[in-house]
Length: 201
Image (cartoon, rainbow, N blue to C red):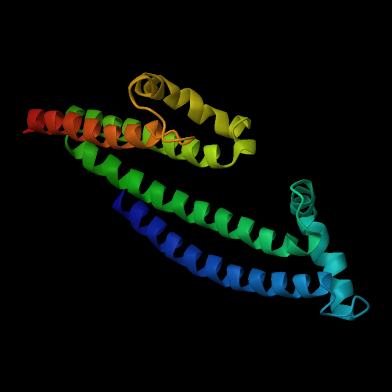
C-alpha cells in the first residue's frame, strides 16, 4: 500500500507540471484566438485560417453556451481557458483525494474494526459537507440547480436544512442554513470521532 501511495504521489506531482504547462499553452492559444476573433490579427492570415480550421471547431460547444448566455463570441477562448482551469483543478483534487483516501484506509485497517468504523464516519461527514458545498455553489448559478449531476446534492442535504429553516431566518434573500449546517456537521463529526477514539483506547 505504501508503494501505491508513493507512486500516486509521484504521478500527482508529474500531473501538476503537465497541467501547468498545458495551461500556459492553452492561454497562448486563447490569446491568439481572441486576437483573430477581434480582428487584431488579419482574418485572411495563415494564423487566422489555422485557428478557424483547428482550434475553433474544438471549442464550438463552449461558443454555443456563451451565445446562449448572451455573451460575445470573442470571449469564447477565455471561457474555454476557464473550463480548462476548472477541469485541471478537479483532476488534481481527485488525485489528491485518492491519495488521502488510501492513506486513511491504511491507518484505519491498522486500528481494526473500530478504525474502519471511524473511517466510515469521516467519509460520511466529508460526503455531506461536499454535498452542501455543491448545493451552495449551485444556488449562486440558478441554471445549474435543475441539472441531474447537481440535483443529488439537494436530496443529500435537504433532510438537515429543512428543520434549520424553521428556526433560522433568512438574511434578506440569503439563506444561511447551508452555512450553519456545514459548521454543525464539523461539530457533530468532532463529537462522534471523540467518542469513537475514546472507545479505541
